[in-house]
Image (cartoon, rainbow, N blue to C red; front, side, top):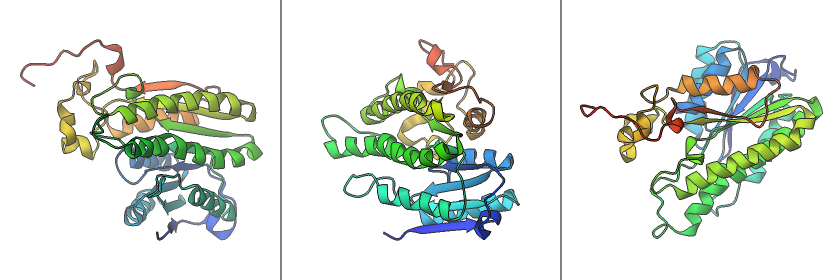
Length: 279
């Protein structure tokens, strides 16, 4: 498979370590991931984005650079999990080695990419489908954190933020692997927060509910009629809502680690929503 890297900007490109902070975001070319990238760029951070699609990562990098002149934008194309269902360890190591070569230190890792595991049914889907979700949402995240944390230890600082889900606590139909992966992710978050705390590396998670992604706009899997679209605060979340939570952990919570922040409009606190019959 062809490997691609797309870069714009200066500073680190010329062999000088950037004086700006840098965020590394997986799955950051559309929807929530791109919203998080825009938030950090708007705050003056350099941005590293990843995607499975070379075309999308190049376009997203160009768009970010055009909207926020002066920041360094790097884009890497790669698959988290390979066709044989194994985690793409070599590519992850290669990307961080390239960042080292360019004197780019990642201050914050945001783990957004995920296999949503939609319509996976216990009696119909093969075990390989379940494994792919777990490897994409848990094991690949661990491999990325492992590479980033090696560098953070040297600097004695760093932040990791998981884009988790309230489905870690509230199951939904035909999403066994996804809910399992998100529960496991929170366990990993807490364990990493404990082990990495002594190096001043913080690890936290935001837990969105329904978000107005392309899937929501297109009503894929009838998600616009899901009861999670009717939280106490009303409506589904925008990308900016999730981005603000990630930004809080990265920039405004220096003494917070192992924490969960639900950004679901209060969906998890209600026993059931009150839905207007006219809706």
